[in-house]
Length: 518
Image 1 (cartoon, rainbow, N blue to C red):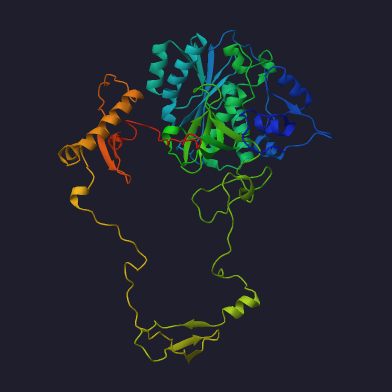
Image 2 (tube, rainbow, N blue to C red; image 1 turned 180 degrees about the vertical axis):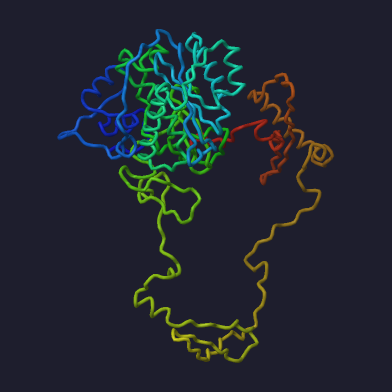
């Protein structure tokens, strides 16, 4: 077993782990050999006695009626026809309030692009962004757009935009979803995978948007037999995709906190959960959700533990409630999460719970004591006792014994304290250069500061440089001391207290001296 910081690289994993990493795609020996030969960094560890098993998560997220399929002639260029469809509304809004997502699928490569929407009115804005990015990446232009007859596609603004761009709009007839089958089937594929990885991670339904984006990210990087045995992404880039950076959705992660966002004693990492990958930000940029601050974080400086998550795999509980006091924490948080939790016994017995006989004996009677009287009180105070039968009895408490000794305040100085001998004002040390020049010991102080200046020049203490624009020079002052042996010492020191943190300096250091040097 190896414990500690590790490289942010997926290790050799079992077939079951890769099944979870790849969005619960169906895997067997032939499929693994097929995928691993067309991608890099996919290493599967073989286990003895492996047999065909049914994944319960796949049954929950994928089971559906068999659909009729048909073949059609595919276009020869990218972006010849783009299929689009909107899925939603979801019964639970995403973390940022989205209830819909719109998909754009290129018919040539079947590469899908997902955009989360608050309302259907955002369809045109999403298409404008997709068109600009896709045409810039591929060097091609969109010729046609196929969609259903939804109002978001038939609005005046959408029609006017397509007409101005010269894009043909192919609209399916009413009640004919098969005419837009590619977009409909793509949405179902993405939702099936998103449903599986959300169920597997144990996250609440409010994370459905991140699951959808992750499912599309993985889908574009897997090879397809119907697309020349290469991945959808390879049709666009001409390079094999790398799967070595993939981790199980919902894995626990530690995100590095930049130096400018923390102080000396602040933690260098914060705990988060993996909720996807940011494709537009660059290579291996992870999308993480900060549990403490409840916000999304993008970072490539991440340590991910694929064996830890918000719950154990196969556990029935799949929903987390961030602010509910009634929701109990998952059982494995005390062992597997980055923060330690420990359930404490209640201070008072919970109402409605059966207490042990010993506890009943302890709570049989309640003693109500009155407020204690002052030191002058001489009477004993009555005490009311209430037993478990509701009877009240009065008992006498013995008088509290108080000391009759006369207390004197402590003297501020005892006989063992030594006082410093007062000196006359004439013998005081000079505080400034003016004081030294006007004192009766002017000659001695002059020798002291001349010796200091000679030492500074001999050791090349400073170098004269022009002052940068907008900066203020740090001043200096003289410090005079008269030693016990009669020597006069003068030191020229800088006014370091005039420096401002963040402007004149960033770090603070303490010089260290070897004992042999002294």
